Image (cartoon, rainbow, N blue to C red; front, side):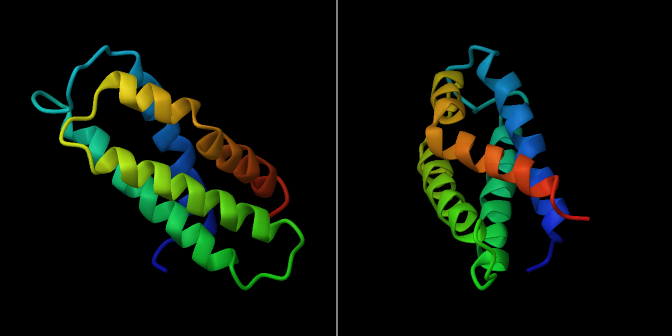
Length: 116
C-alpha cells in the first residue's frame, strides 16, 4: 500500500468531483482532446478503492467491513467503465449515479470525520 488512508480518501473524493464535470461535458468518447484524463482519474480511484479495502480488511472496527464491501463494489463498477473502448459522459453519469460509488463516498465522508 503506497498511499495513506487520507490520500486514498482524497483520491476518491477528488475523482468523483472530476467525474461530475466530465459527465456534464456531453462527450461521446474519451478519445481525443483531454479525454484520457478520465481514464487516469478512474484508474486512480480504482487503486484508491482497492487500497482502502486492503487497509481496512483486517481492522476490527464495526464499520470497516461496510467500507471494505462498498470499496469492492465501487471498484467493480469502475473496472467495468474502464474496460470500455469509449468512455462517454453518459456512461460516467451512470457511474456517478451508482449506489455503490455513492455509498463508498458517504462511508468515506463519515470515516474521515472520525480519524485524525
